[in-house]
Image (cartoon, rainbow, N blue to C red; front, top):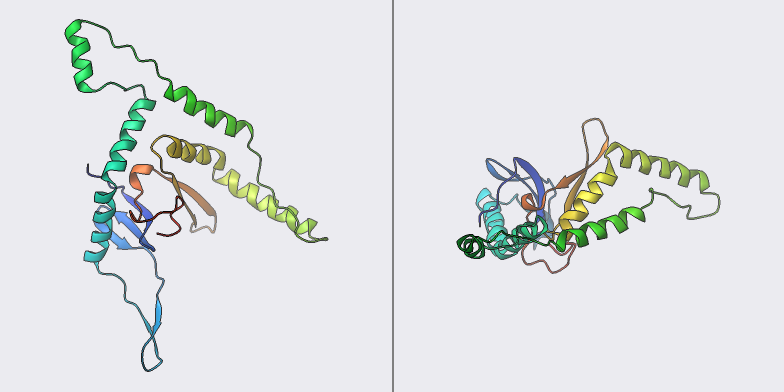
Length: 204
């Protein structure tokens, strides 16, 4: 199953950040890796070639093909599309209406409802006595960032991606106006190191 490419996204794979666009993969980071040669001089690793970046993406796409297929099936079940083509054909041949009792969607929505009911606004706590004013200022900043990005909605959308297709991701950055931004990355637009073992991809 081919993975649909986004118009432009930043993603993390194999320890590097890349931008996926219509023209292929481009390195989105400027970090350099330092090393010491025999003479003790520090050298920097060059940016990976375009061929290597494409290979990273192709490997991630191919090695996660089964999991993406399973994710699509999970979305179908959530959307009450729970019968195969063969099963639908048998129902049609018998003249029997298709009746789907969806027990998946209410369970997922119930979990989301519980988390939404127990949510709270961002809050910074003072670490040391006398830090109350600093904590209040930090709290105001956190709540402004959350309101500016409509974080409650973004968090809910990401959580739904985690519960149904099984992967959620978001990009945090700073725009041209120095505003902190939080943007959801749709699960089908996100690719990762297929050899990662941690659920948060910290070992990617």
